[in-house]
Length: 419
Image (cartoon, rainbow, N blue to C red; front, side):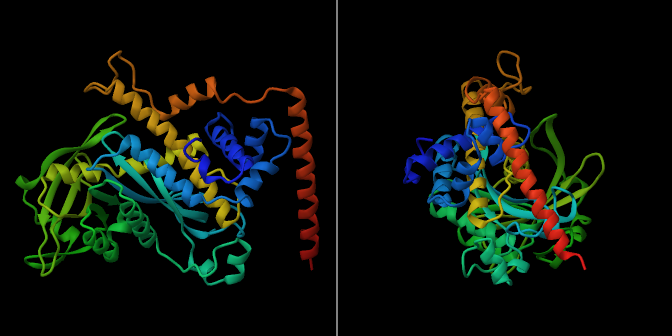
């Protein structure tokens, strides 16, 4: 809180931000303004709703403090900037950015809000340092709808790779030490993003589709067709990093790419599952030659953003917001990422002081502390809820009164729509 205190001009929103951060890390069944306000001992959620919706403070400046906090403890000149998107399932059509679209959260097309995130991954640990809400064309082509959700005037449609490029360039312009970028097929199949990374001389290992076409000395070929021509002796067994059940072993092969004007060292990296034989493909670039093991290590680092999503949603309420407007979403997401970064940095410090052995256990024979265990310890010692029974009863009355108003309003609207 001392880090971000200067980003609030008044003491009231600064205190509310502290309450929200404590609530986001608390052991609550759901995390929204109602539950966090009750946890903090407030009489109503009005103060937290004011913090997210109307108080004067810049979420982007707090994001910059989040990034500086993560770098202070996790900085590494060989770090990987990992980009990926995640969706939050929503009802209705008034929440900013919501439409029926594919989201990996559900694994199908659902009514959802999608955002792209940037995670900083180093040998010390990993945490998300930036976020960008994806605004579909159904929103950017409807000025009135954008006005109702307080979307900045004149905001143009941007694809997910464009949002990823903006976040990566913003990080590099701020002096973030990193040597690589990683992402899935959405980003690897985008030539403009790859060109932007090459221009900044930032190496990348980006997943691509099996139909992705790559330049070779024999001409342009599809990735899956090229994989069939790789001899057996070219495959190497390498670990993509340690997972929950030990090292993740795969067979790997690489094919050098060649074309006039092709920048740096470029390869098609192919991963083969040792059990099923399933193949995955990666487009790789590095300013200077690097061994295959380095490319494999970068490819394996992409899982960290998935772990970040799961952890930040489960432990810090990233997806449990109940806000509809542009600024409110960015404020909630930024503070949720800051709460998660606190847990991630604490884990990194614990593991630095007690590095795990080869079998993944600590010197005392225990599993190393993880974010969920840090949260339990923190909650038990510092983030205890208010236990006043009178206050609990007041909140019960407030909730039922609010729900009664909402029900009457719903019934009235339903009656007006009847023929």
